[in-house]
Image 1: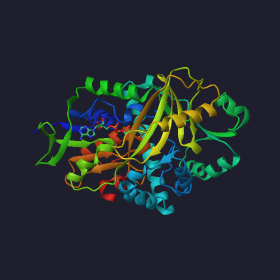
Image 2 (image 1 turned 180 degrees about the vertical axis):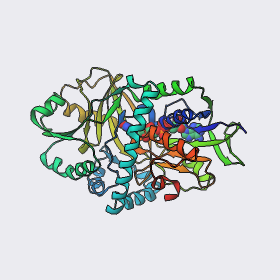
Image 3 (image 1 turned 60 degrees about the horizontal axis):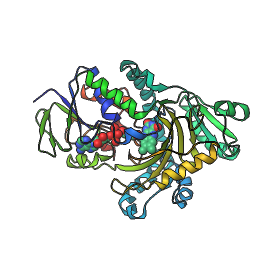
Image 4 (image 1 turned 90 degrees about the horizontal axis):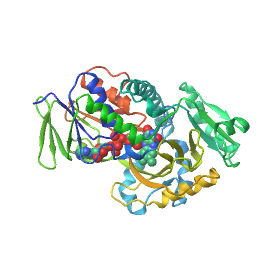
Length: 412
Ligand SMILES: Cc1cc2nc3c(=O)[nH]c(=O)nc-3n(C[C@H](O)[C@H](O)[C@H](O)COP(=O)(O)OP(=O)(O)OC[C@H]3O[C@@H](n4cnc5c(N)ncnc54)[C@H](O)[C@@H]3O)c2cc1C
């Protein structure tokens, strides 16, 4: 048996896990069935959303969902053919939205985000990725004072977790983002939110870093992880067998078949998200803008202006419906008069999502030498370094810096 740790999946989470394990002197091998960072990690909105601690599964979301579902191209959609498949997940989401469970998830998310911010800062520094990071915050926008008032409870909860923000209007709003449609009367600025120059470039730079530190990569699809004494056998579809000391499953939205074979029934689904990336200079965008009432963000990247978000609970197999990208782009054109909407590239990605809005980080039922690291939903880039740190703790048999009981696979 080799002393290697095999990491299934070379998305941002697998790469951050590799980086942290190398930091402890471990040899790592990534196994990736496609191209590196070509899953959800490629085209996301690029935010280190450290202040985004409110679980999606919330009483507020249950209030908003019926209205959003009425609009077939709105922020939330369920293709009718997928409704029977996703019904059990929706039921769990509804249960996780109850006030007591919501409050529990909020506390856990707040703690995880504290680790996420510190771990990301350290990883960016140590991997020399500082040039990829913009620290100019996020501006959330409201079309009425009533909309801001409705959001206040969430801001109070963030304040309780020590998160800084500033409600802005008038001149201050225009200073933070000139050229907004006058329909936006107020905003909330969160200064400690960061974005990357382009999430794909960020992930590839991290990949280059882990390869330079001696990682190996095998291209192929893992079909089985099985415990051996004393390690893990990793079997690939082409018949290759890798005998490793430990394995980490970071397969994003595609992780479920491997967990099922290990005896873990994990309610992992995908929230499909859409965007359009316009050429650079399409708008004089000062920082990332969140149009919370419409479920999308506009992000300044080195590669262009990215307009996107939305949630489509449509599973892994249905073809993309790029009318969703167009619907968000049309709204963005109305919200940012002068936005040049030509020449964009559309994309759809699969967020790996768990109904309680928390990732799965912890040992498998079958073996503590097989550790799970997936299910980060809307926050995988943000929480990638924290996941790397927690997985490194678990594989070293150290007590992690936060209680992982609410993140473990056996919580379901
Ligand atoms: C529109 C959109 C916007 C988003 N915006 C943000 C944001 O601003 N900030 C943020 O933090 N997050 C954001 N996210 C979420 C974020 O993109 C994901 O949470 C994150 O990329 C998940 O990373 P991952 O490494 O787990 O998965 P992925 O990037 O999907 O990587 C998983 C990898 O595992 C490989 N794989 C799977 N199964 C196997 C197997 N059996 N064998 C071999 N390889 C396998 C896949 O090929 C893939 O490369 C957004 C997502 C979307 C869709």
